[in-house]
Image (cartoon, rainbow, N blue to C red; front, top):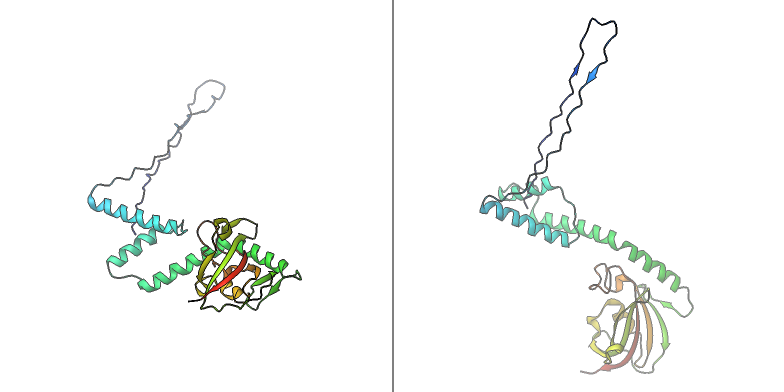
Length: 247
């Protein structure tokens, strides 16, 4: 990725000239100091694409920059960025493409983690307080659930397809999805759902309705899901197990 550098010319400093003139008069004349003229800083020169090579080089930098900007990278060492690009063309890179890929992934994971840490902290605090309620049970994985209604049917296995109604909210109460609002239950293989559902729904006899409080690690993880579920979010699901769909 090649960086287009903008060169700014240096500005000269003009020193004032001090002049004194002796006279034969009995009094010493005052010293006259000339005022320096104001100096305007030079304006940065505009980028000029003089050839098809210039245009292609700029376009590569722009597209690569836009890609990584979308990944959350907003600051780079432009000099080393250009050198990395040049070293690849000259077959003298300081690391392999695989090492470079792993390094970038690690750094981006750090940036993502830093960005979503407030969501993780807020979720952990909520779940810690919620676990103190006597109605709430906590499994070894950290999944919390509360029985609203206990059914009498069989419990599904992870390999089965289930028929459920559900409503999903963030811990601040904001609803992000609901089969009830759509007026149609969800029919879906249980083992293709998030970890919190796979574990939790297997605890439910058919006819049950449970509230599940799901840590981010059992939900949509650090990446979240679209704009409605930010990364690192703990989730609350109100799930009613209507039936197990027999194949």
